[in-house]
Image (cartoon, rainbow, N blue to C red; front, side):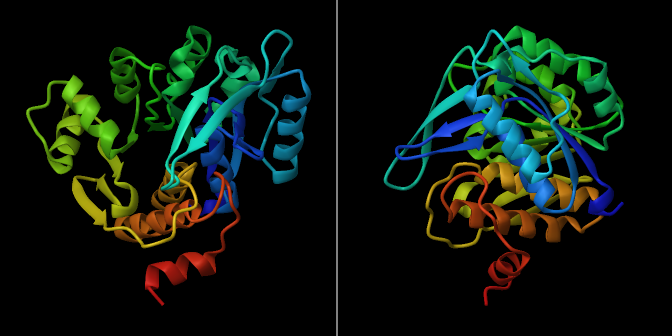
Length: 298
């Protein structure tokens, strides 16, 4: 399957990331979708925005970017999501996520069900499950026979380990960062301390054959078809970490599901994630030339 034919649907939060001096569209599922779009995939998003100025602005920007918006509802009751982003001196972000927002109340209609049924891959995260309405909508979509990618995104206090385990059990592919992996493994009473052992533990516990763990500047680990692959990261000057993991996941899934070799895929994904971290915001434009240059070290 070529990336031009790869159809991806992302379910979950779309919102405005509000920085000190500006705001940018964001939300992990949307960030993944936007990066997959830039890599040649056909993408759509299932979500909800408010019937307000912020919501109209998001819809207009997504249409300009070529993202399918037919299943993004407009709420008359709840506002478009906002997240206040605070960056420390290293560019690492902390988030104040407003509740309730329109994306907490995503309702699924026949159009949404059909969209997922006709897609190759469904991307979903854990944050959207903080509200029962969106969680039940997601659970209905997880019944489809489709390749399911679970992007773990722990934002305290917006998650429970019981729901996380159910979401993992539904997935074909799970992506964690290293802190998330160790926290969840401990909650599942893993006897192990290393990432490698805990990847195998969670794969066995959840019956998920493909798992990836990102390690920030130190790269990532990938379990794919029973074999472990790794990349040790690429040195960049970090502007901020917002969206770097989302673009990493987009690049990795696009590569793997279009038949690229696992090692080439994780190298490509780590380079994409590093270049996003080197630029402000979650969705900077990056070129294949920049990616190839970083991988080759030239």
